[in-house]
Structures are given as structure tokens and as C-alpha cells.
Length: 195
Ligand SMILES: [Zn+2]
Image (cartoon, rainbow, N blue to C red; front, side):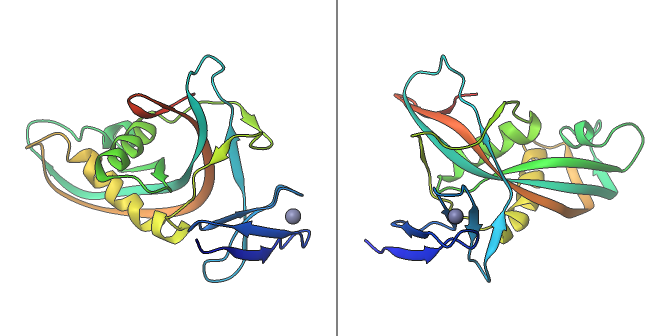
């Protein structure tokens, strides 16, 4: 297995990473950074576990993309846009939204289920300052890739209502991307959110 050793950009402590992971976490000073095209310290949040959650605990990284959506024109058969109307209030054609991009390796169905679930219902949680003894899954999707995937998530969510959306001309502008670690448990049915 390939081991990478780098130094924390904050305190210079050595950090070893054994898996393909875009994120480097310093256990000495809790600084998280990425080295994808230059060292960048990352702002991040760690969600607290629901104490009644059963199973093996782990943290899954998400890129929470804060974006502005502008719909220029649309062609919708027999109604209005399904999900997009939740983000665009009233008669306006503009809305702001948080798009959750799972940053770890998932199959297509898992990716769509989690991005759809958290983007339509933003998760609520209290935060904590460190991971405790809970493992975090590696981030295989970079911050830049997440910004590109945000577009894909919006379109696939809307397209889940078959036959309704005929045409959509829009612009999605990414304002900010934050790293969020959400609590999960591994059970018989696979990984489930433990919020
Ligand atoms: Zn450090």
C-alpha cells in the first residue's frame, strides 16, 4: 500500500496517509488540508452522532456546495418544476441552495441516494470539534470535482419526475464549498446516516 507523508501546513507535524485520500488531517492541531494543485487549508464541520444509532460508526465526507441557481427559461409539461421550486421561492427565477456531494467512493445508486436526500432535506446536526475515535472514510472526490458534480446532481434530481421536465436552461454558480463530515453507521443494510 502506498504511504504518503506530508507536513501539516499549520504546525509542521508529520501526517501519514495510507490510502488514496484528497484530505490530510493533523491530529496535533486538527487542521485539515488538501494538496490538489497547491496546499489549501480547509474549513470543515463534524456532525455529532445520534446517540441511539446502532452499528459500526464512521464519518463520511461531503462537499457542501453553496450555489446560486438562475433559471433562464424552462419548458415543463403540466405543472411546475418539482424539486427546483423548493429552492426557487415564489415567482423569482433565482434561488440559493446547498448541494451535498458525497466525497467518498460510492456506487452510482449510493451517490444519487445520498446527494438527493441531503440536497432536498439539508441535514440538521450539532457539531463537534474532532473525530473522537471514529474512522473517517477517504475523500476520493476533490473540491474542484465536487463543483462540477453539483450541476449533475441538480439535473438528475429534477429528472426523477418522468415526463415533466422538457427543457431547462439555467446557470448554476458555485459561491462556496465547505467540507462536512456526517455520521454514519454500518449495519446489515449497508451504510446509513446516523443523524
Ligand atoms: Zn497540525
